Image (cartoon, rainbow, N blue to C red):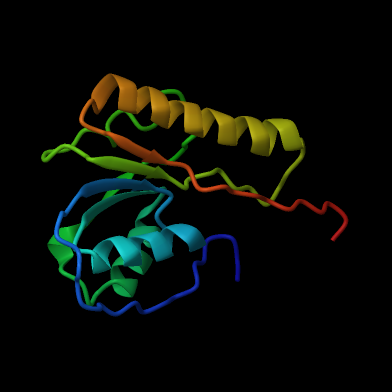
Length: 156
């Protein structure tokens, strides 16, 4: 799989047994973990807005979840999560978000400096979403940050 390709998966709906629906912002929607989170949220009839870097990711995610109601899944472009203010527009929503799940993390296949290229960017991305929530999304009561780990082996 190349760096711009996401494994194509076709998720199908299962019955909804939950009553309270939430409006959720999910960052990094094309990632492996995020795709499964989207599936669970849609199965529970929540509405999901997910961030993506480019249109190709929208196409892949939309195709994967074509069996679900299209009004339950939306997209917002955030090209660089490490950029100051990256999520300021993404957290603005009507209806407002109830929860934010942060799975976005910058990934590069050309690491020159682990601290600068991976760690600082991941910390900046998390800081940016927290600042955006504080400034522009006062209705968000739940924030979830699944543990992410990248294994870097420069000699492979």
